[in-house]
Image (tube, rainbow over all chains, first blue to last red; front, side, top):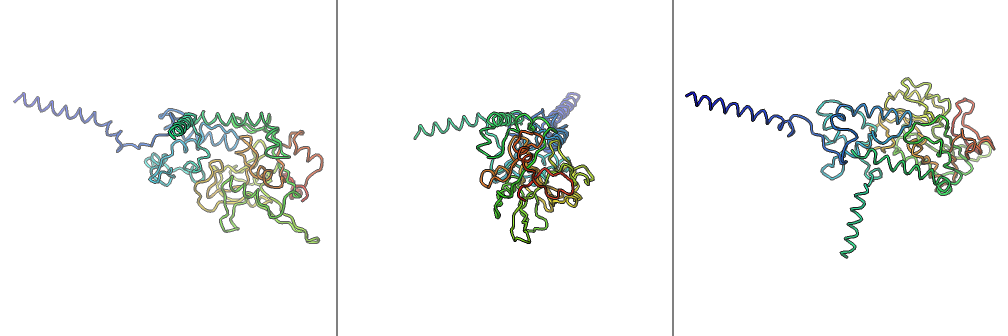
Length: 153
Length: 251
């Protein structure tokens, strides 16, 4: 009798432990917190925790300096965020702020914080690709591909 | 985003290239307009605009053929505005105004845009400080704090500002504009900050009559300062004493 009670207690503890360890996993899997899509670049201009807390201040400072003083550093430019964090929609083109998939909306809708950046600024990269910088590595890969195709011909 | 330092690099390189090859590019891109002004005194991308500079335009109407609207088209493409189909609320970045002499019947067309006044009336009347003059004399609207009251539109004697009445999407990244704010010619401030000429000036020199001369009024060695010193040009409504930076010849 005592033995079966101990077993029961043990199994209850085990279940509780398993549940406790499953909690963070559930949080990460998507039902608890927003999961903004990752950017295309290797890393952001600052680490994620800092960006979460301070991105609005960085943008605010940058906009004041750029518009009123003419300091046009590229590092904290909103266009940089938009280009790097573009999310492709069903048609393969980057989605605009109208779509819930948009990078900014994925958090801002969740937090119920409305932003008006995109009433004036474009919320997706230019279609012509004028602003998209081709990275040297990509250019090299393209050149090698072309070379291989030429050889095969 | 890894784009930060990486995208800044090509910009710096381009500026260095422009500085180095200033004389060559001047003859190539725009006869009559030199890029010398950008060399030491121009507002570099990473630093603030300099108050030692006073950007100005000299427009020779004699070289501005009637019917030509290359400057207007260039501005429209560069800054992404288009006519709404309702002339009452159309954007007024730049337009060609027809002048007709009643006695001789002779008529001319004058490109009119924000005159970037030294004493801008629009800045005086703005209740929020959104309308402001940058250190290098460019008059701009800070749309972040513009409340759309349109006092500046009423104050401007050149009718060089307009109000955005309808929601917009997919604006140009370098020329944000949106519903509920006032806008006007920025003298292509995004181009100037990376050592490029305003779109209208560049197009006029490339494809048009080369009627527009751009430069620094404060630099006595600049082409525009020399040209103005030689023959004083006229200003539109000079009687108002606003001291516009856009001057006209053969008006």
